[in-house]
Image 1 (cartoon, rainbow, N blue to C red):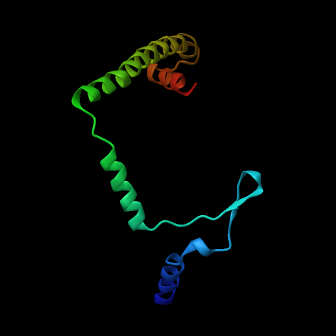
Image 2 (image 1 turned 45 degrees about the vertical axis):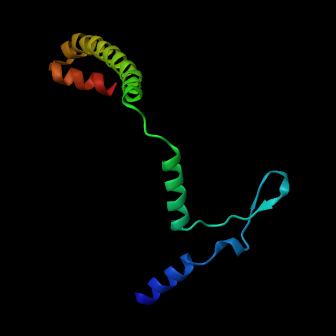
Length: 111
């Protein structure tokens, strides 16, 4: 178990910039990829978070309204369609096969 752990650690700590693997890009040229370390990733994340300002309260309110209004509209339309479809299924299949209202609603959800 310890030898497997050591081999995995040594395999992941190699510098892949000198690996013979390359990837072809447009035009037939090849480009080598260098692996990033966790320190590089942390530094990049800090630079991005420092460069991007936090949104203000009015910006967040506008974002909320822009996202909420279409969802409320979709909810009303969806419920309207489901009520009409459920009523139609209840009046046709429910009466024909003697289904309860909840079973007809389940059929409406399924179909």
